[in-house]
Length: 245
Image (cartoon, rainbow, N blue to C red; front, side, top):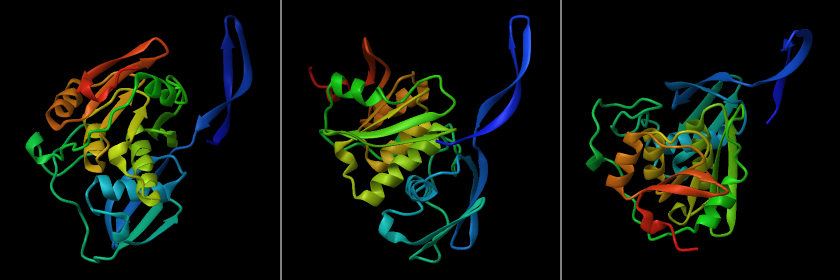
């Protein structure tokens, strides 16, 4: 992903000299649905149609990409028209970490449940996680299946990168029940919620997971995996989804 070149002062021991570095692109984007402002997000200015599709879906404003009439991307603005012109906001959902919602308590009974018998091997998880690099300037989320990585997106925030992955899958007609998502960084409860809405049965990370993310994943049937490396991984919930090597 392109980055902006910026001047800086580089200090190395007693040495101080003018230099240059790369700054990740970030911009505010106002999100309008049927002419009404739905949200403003800070995101990378790339693959905004995929982001818009995934955001509409995970926020439960639409139930399928077929409900979208048009997406118009302009500078600092995404305008979406749906086939139902009165559709503005999604159904009430629990407020979790990351992007906000409509109610202020957690009720896992109101969240979607995973209904899939899909399993994955540790080798497939490690292979899918070999692309995302922890510790970089950008977060990375990949969607993978039995044949390997299907799509991978970077962003300043892994929540919006996950929206892009889901948006790509929706536009491509991917069956999410036979996929898994791999991310960098700490898995949050909001990422778990997005996977539940999409029906992605396995969410894995090169980092760890919050206690709330683990609690929700356990209650909803989602397999949550962390600490993926060349030497192994840890399974927080529903280890039956990780097949024997």
